[in-house]
Image (cartoon, rainbow, N blue to C red; front, side, top):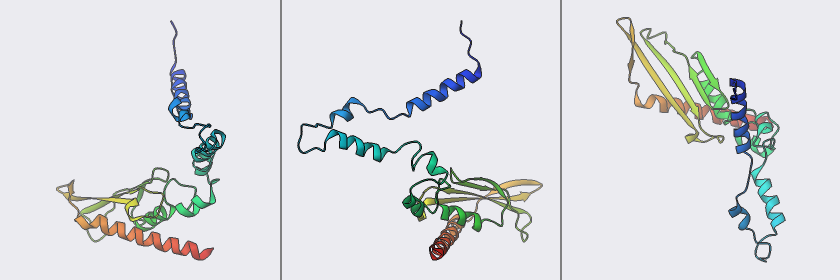
Length: 189
C-alpha cells in the first residue's frame, strides 16, 4: 500500500494545475490552417502569430508584467504595471477613504476594506466601506463601492440602511480624484 503525505498530495495537485495550463492545441485548431490553400497564410507564419498573441508566463501579461517588467503601452493604459487593477482608481480610492481606518487592501484583486469608522458628530453610528476595482482601465463602471452602517441601540450594534445615493456619491468622488491624479501624472512627463 502506498502512503502519501500531505506535502506529496499538494505537490501533485500543483503539478496538475501547472501542466493543465500549458497551451496544447487541439486537432481542430491545427486543421483550420491549410498550407495548400493560397488564401491562407503559411502555417509557419500563422503559428508565429498565434504564439505572439498568446504570450507566455514570463511575458507582459504574466509574472514579469506583475512585477513591472511589461510592455510600456500597457503601463500607460492601466496607470502602472505593479498592481493588477487601474492604478489611478486604486490611488484615488485610498485617498478618498483615507479618513477611515484600513482593514485590508489587495492591489492584485482590487479590493479595499475599511474597518468600522465612527464619525465624531454621531458617536452612536459607525460606517464601513468596501471598494471593488473591477477594471484595468480608468472607467466609471470599473469601480463599485458598498457602504455599511450600524447604529448603537441598547449596547448592541444593529445594521441600518444607508441612503441609496451614499455609495454613488462616494464612487463619484473617487472617479473625480482618479481623473485629477491622471491629469497630474501626464503633466509630470
